[in-house]
Image 1 (tube, rainbow, N blue to C red):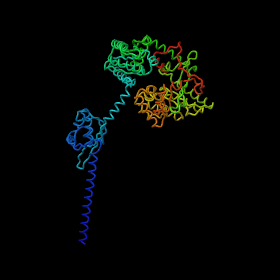
Image 2 (cartoon, rainbow, N blue to C red):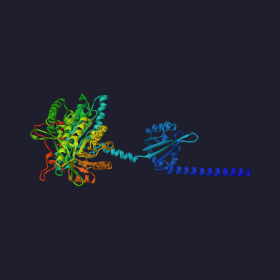
Image 3 (cartoon, helix red, strand yellow):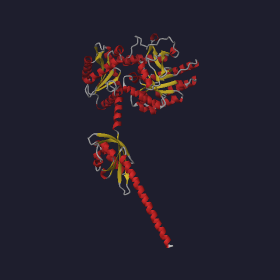
Amino acid sequence: MSSLVSLLALLGAATLTVAYLLHTRAVRRAEANLRTIFDTAPIGNAVLGSGDRIVEVNHALGHIVGFTRKELIGRTLAQLVHSEDAALLTDAVAALRAGERGGLESELRVVHASGQAVPVAVHAAALRSPDGGTRVLLQLLDITERKRVEAHLQHMADHDPLTGLLNRRRFEQELERHVAHAQRYGTEGAVIVLDVDRFKQVNDAYGHSTGDRVITSVARVLRRRLRTTDTLARLGGDEFAVLLPKADRREAGIVARRLVEAVRAQADVATGERADAVTISVGVTVLEEHAELTAEGAMIDADLAMYDAKDAGGDGFAFFAADADAARTRTRTTWRDRIVDALANDRFALVAQPVFDAASGAPVQHELLLRMTGPHGTLIPPAAFLSIAERDGLVVAIDQWVARRAIALLAEREQAGRPVRLEVNISGRSLADATLLALIATELRRTGVDPRNLIFEIPETAAVADVQLARAFAQHVQSLGCQFAIDDFGAGLGSLYYLKHLPFDMLKLDGELVEQCTKSPADRLLIESAVRVVHGLGRRAIAEQVGDADTHALLRELGVDLVQGHHLGMPLPLESAFDPSPTQPPTQPPTLPPALTLPPAVRLLQRAA
């Protein structure tokens, strides 16, 4: 019996020995595998021991910082990380060791052997050992290329592709920042808005390529004549703006005069036969002269002063003046009365511009465009009155009128057996108007029209200004069966981010992108990117202001679904827009009757209407 017990004991001991050996071998294999993973990983790995010194490191980290593994062993965390970022990382590592945080994800800079700062994404975690000690695993990923692309995209978002100057969005941000500082620490500085004289005639006579050369020539002259502390931007078209952060009235006048003289002397229109001088009209407003200073108000006043200079014959400058503003206020009041009268007596009208399938060329839908009926039946474009309607709160009533008339028009067409699909523009102010939403629901119910034929579109600026409100509006009209579109998309590259928050059906590309896409690789790239995003979300892209066959062909190549513009179809009165006669000549854009005086601040808008 004792022999049997001894034998069993020996067998048990042997079994335990074999199990131990197998376990040890498995542990060693696992350790070897982990070591291989650590050493060959494509991202930088380092283990920090006591004193935040590197005790283990792989080849990838050595490649990132330009040191060998041997040179890195023993270095401290402070020697590896950029001095401005070291405190942040050492504090985080200390919190990991103390168990105060579970992990770390951040971006900072490490120092290359050449002294160059290298941007990296950092992940860190605490490694607890059985003896109670704590080491820290650092993982570093070189994000130099990503940062370069981000910087390039940010530059594209902030700068005008033709001139390289800041664009309108970035200039307005800089002005807002300056005004906020001035309101807190004392008002100073001046804003200048300038416009190239007779630029439309240059484009018409010599073509857009010559116009582009004029713009770049003026931009070069302005850049040379201004200080590096001044902010210069191209607002769009032939309009530029300057922020003089320290100028008073006297200095602003000197700068304005020098800009006028410099452009006259140095910029020209090279036509191949001769070089004609270019001149500009400059408007100046001094910030300390504003009783209620706002960035928007300063821009408006400088723009008004610029039109005063243009009205005086151009090739000069003018300051914004309060007495001139009083005259403008009287003009605005007159236009407000006309808007109220038009609402009360049904003196608004709609015209319709066709929207075509980009591939087949077939008309798909129409955009309704607002006009005011003037004396003798003339049609006044919205640039003459819409900004005043916005400012005085009348635009909501106008939007209600347009929505009601659009639904009635759908009903008329359906009853006649010739249904159409209509786009209706809604202002940002109307997004929160419960009355408008109730009116739409009531009229759709009363008429029984197919709501899928009604598309409500809001400008991108309104959508971005209040994403929650825009989303609520979109969801409401979609719940009624209508479609929702974002208009004028592309003013800002960051707007791509907002698409995931807005349940849109269609996205209309901004006309400025479309107009320049055959000449500007940046605009073409932005359109292509937007179209890919839109199609990826299962939506459709519309391009407006298509001005020629080349642009149409390129947009079709880039995958744009729908196109519209004067090249394809002019806005027409409703009675002829949907069933035009084969011999009917295209209509020309309406003009203002001589008896009506257009507010100076919107004359530029009228040119583009």
